Image: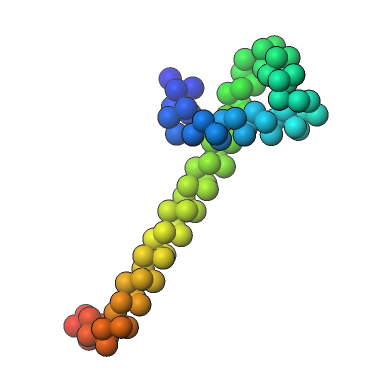
Length: 90
């Protein structure tokens, strides 16, 4: 189940990037890394995905916070354009 959950959370391009980064870290090409390292150690793929999943979730959290802040700024800007009538009511 844990493996399926990772696939649901992280898009395919992130999983590919994770394996590419691991191959680069190992000093091998993508195909050679997949053929040799991943086939020899099936748990390695899951460890790579777990590491990248954390980074993906952090990035998604930061993006959500950025969007919230931008929305808050738009609301403030609209209030200023209207002559601050909403601020006096509050």
